[in-house]
Length: 366
Image (cartoon, rainbow, N blue to C red):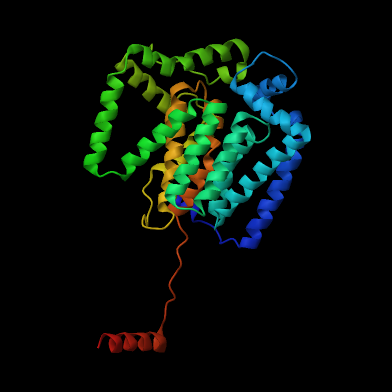
């Protein structure tokens, strides 16, 4: 069904796509300047913490908010505005550029909207992740897979050491996912077995350290914000054993990817569709895997898997998970365009033309 939608509608010229991207970017820039007057309060939750640090507060001293606040403070208010809007405009042009038909444009805009809403109307930590994603896409379009892998390692390690330590875990999961997808059936079975044995051998304190942050985050949301508490959820079982870890993790997978089953409503239905598109883009086999860019696209897809796998350990509510995952949605959009390439129809000849072609084929075979 997604393929039918993606390849549906009329072909769009490059000029029309550039016009759509330009108008969208201008509209986005205007909305950014007025974001405080119409966006809900929860969008500014992390941004307000960063702004408080810029203003001289010590509440979040030596935390990731403090590190990001120092960066934005160095840009100044005007510089920060230009910085964020420029990232948003580049993302819009990139996502629109992956569209060949009207259907593809609709799908890409659907993927783009939550990323802009959550990450590009405020100067936040995830704004920097969007920038990292765009830099990797730019590198992937020009360089070989190994160079892209090195750039990804440098950017993720740099971000982990300065802002979010768990990006090291995202990178590790991405490497494991790449090895698994590149391995034979026997190799995949061995990797899966090693993973299960490794998880089973962890001490109970490790399960608690991995999953308990979700419970603490939900407690914080319940006490301080009614927005996140609406779709917030605790672990199903106390994360103290291998069995409870697996149960809690599978519970989070269902809650975060099929939320309409747990919170029936229009927002949850839209999020379920969004997650469905991302999952298809990342996990469906790519046709023509021998293409020059197949390796680089796979690397970016594995990074998305890393983000998903790690975020599901601690994300406490649907909005937070959507915000973090859509910061790298450009990876999924690029792979989606390779899953459903625009097919070039071969010309059909009739009458004398067909006879001449058949005769030429006979002469060549003779």
